[in-house]
Amino acid sequence: MTPARLLLSEVVAMSRLSAATLRRRWRTGKFPAPVDRGKQLLFDRAAVFKHFGLDDPVASTPPRAKWIVRGSAETAP
Image (cartoon, rainbow, N blue to C red):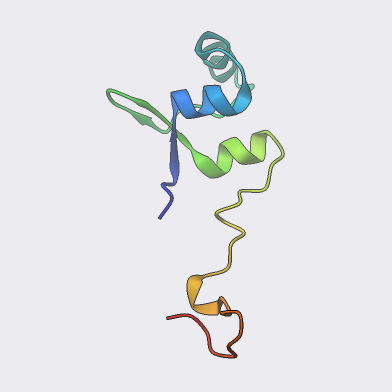
């Protein structure tokens, strides 16, 4: 199961922006702010994907019960 939150390091890698640039952008309202404040900055996955205009591949994947196994008309368990 994929988490609904992204770490700052994951957002930096995905956006190819520095952590300092992301901080400036969320403080000025140009980027979604972190949702949890603790030892790690966590971002809402859906908000980050929406900001970049991307489809979340996990959200668009059909539930496993609806997958069809090749060579069989039955659905996967």
